[in-house]
Length: 148
Image 1 (spheres, rainbow, N blue to C red):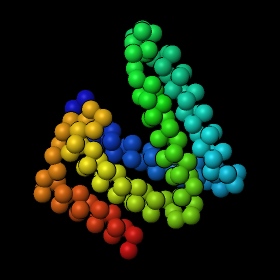
Image 2 (cartoon, helix red, strand yellow):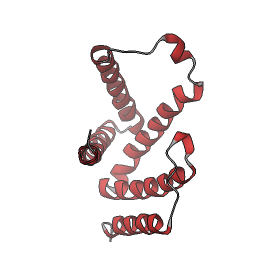
Image 3 (cartoon, helix red, strand yellow):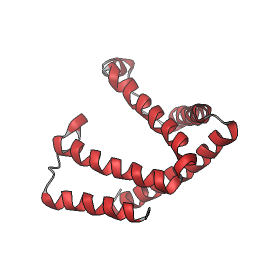
Image 4 (tube, one colour):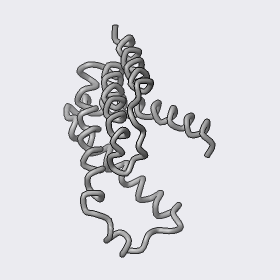
């Protein structure tokens, strides 16, 4: 994919995150249980992922390749997704979707800057320069303006 298409896809993913967060937070409110809403969401997501994997994937890795993956990589992402999604569904009805996304985005910007600066988890190293720091600060300032 070309860079512009990837940027468009990332923008669209942002829209999907707001939509799913809003809908699933509403589910949690109606059920009076954010954990149940999160569980339903993750079961549907996992089921859909398995179906797509079975029908769309032509080159699944050999079992030996799967066994060579460190155990933490098999579980850490799912655990963090569960924590993030469940927290999102709990917070949204209390402070609103825009506020939740604004502060969530600020946390993402700061942590992404630090993680990429050090190249954690195999990320490409992107040192924090004054220009990047100013960009992150400006984005967080801009996000904070949506809440004033």
